[in-house]
Image 1 (cartoon, one colour):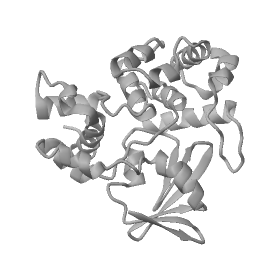
Image 2 (image 1 turned 90 degrees about the vertical axis):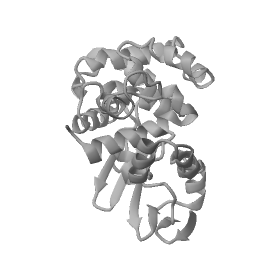
Image 3 (image 1 turned 180 degrees about the vertical axis):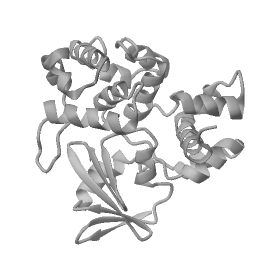
Image 4 (image 1 turned 135 degrees about the horizontal axis):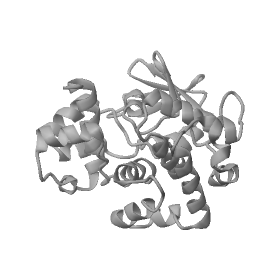
Length: 276
């Protein structure tokens, strides 16, 4: 993996275990738009367009300074995913899934945005989740121009109140979003405390928020805080456990990268095996 500076941006050549399209499609983020061989991602107060280009990806309009200072970290490009996949070589299910979805990387997303996005995702489908999140950003987020709206801070949501969230049509989730904003602002739930806690303590901290159970909390820890041991269990992962591992399976047995294994298994089970 190496970069080239071009007149159109930074070209990431021969990337190992990195595919931004697959990474976006595995359920960890929602503020993206795919259009053929291009994907536009909204993150870190920026609007990024990545284009498939030969044996690599072009980060359009991005300087080397921005790539190194923002996107290298955001896409977790400094982590050795090949070594992680190798560490699971004794598990045929994970190895098979990783061979199919090895381009997945865990994005280093903003914890607050991840929390609210996952609250919105409950009992919801992807198009509607994306629509609600976009509506929230347009309603209460800062407009940076060019269709790029910053995800609103807790203060903006708290000031809007549950009634003020009505235009985004989040339904029962509005009161959970509001509760998350209030508890974050008051310090009852502290992002800094979560970041510096053990996995068990961080999980308990997030579950103080109304509507946040084990699944959402584990997703937030994995996608927003970098707890790679977190293992979210949804309907697809329940099928994985039942079909591949059986009763009594303990995600902790997968070690510190259980969450990365979960992403491979989830993506493979949903896209290759499908409904059955």
